[in-house]
Amino acid sequence: MNVIVFASRKGGSGKSTLAAHIAAHVHKSTKPCLMIDADPQGSLTLWHKLRGTNEPPIKAAVNSVSGIIAAAKRDGIEWVFIDTPPNLSAVVDDAIKNATMVIIPARPGVFDVNAVQETIQTCRTARKPYAVVINGAPASRDGVESRIVTIAREALVKFRAPVWSGQITNRADLLLALGNGEGAREYYAEGRAAAEISRLWAAIERSIKAIRGNASASGAMHKQAA
Ligand SMILES: Nc1ncnc2c1ncn2[C@@H]1O[C@H](COP(=O)(O)OP(=O)(O)OP(=O)(O)O)[C@@H](O)[C@H]1O
Ligand SMILES: [Mg+2]
Image 1 (cartoon, helix red, strand yellow):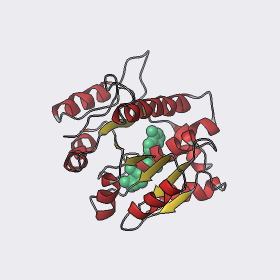
Image 2: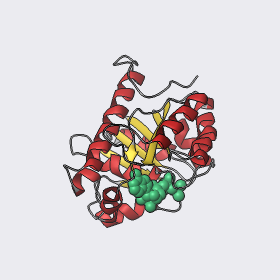
Image 3: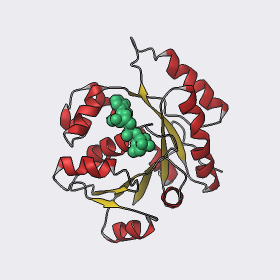
């Protein structure tokens, strides 16, 4: 079983958005997923209610996720996706301790990029692999990424933070899908939002294979925290 934690102490960076889209993208009867909403704001829970199918299932966590994760393992769940609140509370710490990998979404602004440092430090202390994912970015033009994204990448290199080479663009489709309780592919399978979520998932899977020792880490986006 693999546990992917979406964490960042910066509010509005895209933790709940990415958790919902990735969970909807991955869940199948042959690949059972569980979502854990560890944020009392309940964004993921709201999306799940709008979805109305109970697929993938969701559990709420208050102070700790460990009990839920142990039960998920016994139930044969393959992937657990945890959405966390924008702080460094006990439940965030517990989620990161239980993580196979931590995804840190960051918008490409100077305040946002700067704010990833504390979450990175938590991952390093817990010795957990992690990667920053640039979210809510301006669209690339003719295959050239926005100057803001390039500047954000340069700043993240200075923190020695591993960053996914792709981006999740600021797209209305991602919001509209959430409002329907859907993932990007369910909303519009041929759309660019769905393509980006699918690329992010491929990168997460590659990293997990490397973390599990089933593939080389070259080309994987994460950094093994040490
Ligand atoms: N790539 C995107 N394109 C369009 N809208 C986005 C994108 N990412 C996030 N949003 C929107 O920005 C807002 C903040 O995103 P989200 O709630 O996912 O952040 P968060 O990190 O979970 O916030 P919090 O820390 O408050 O839990 C939401 O309205 C969300 O739908
Ligand atoms: Mg949230």
